[in-house]
Image 1 (spheres, one colour):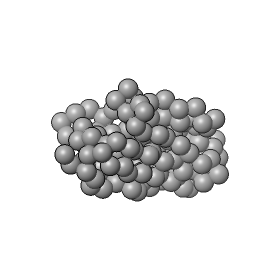
Image 2 (cartoon, one colour; image 1 turned 90 degrees about the horizontal axis):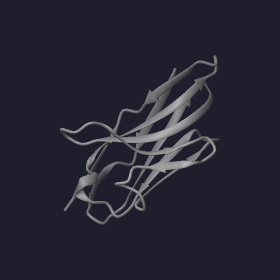
Image 3 (cartoon, one colour; image 1 turned 120 degrees about the vertical axis):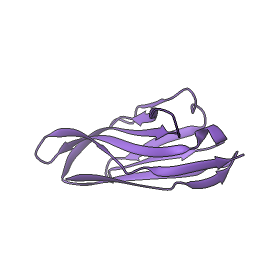
Length: 120
């Protein structure tokens, strides 16, 4: 069984910063892409950022230049550094990872979500 545990959400004023963390644990052989999604009230879940195992990154247009995704393969951990936050960034943020298990089975796993609230 593989688990993703997120931390780092909270309440911040507009213009502020937060750093989200997500650690994967369990019987892991390797991890492919690691991603951050978010879902605001009444809206669909959207992809925020992706980092490959080779550290190639992609971002949603709405966060380019403000958010930075990074990972540590040895620690099976991914971070999302969020700067210059705006109220529109308010959402539940979810970590997701494509994991190859110790039995060489591939699955996508999700964290439980962490709330980010940006006040104006």
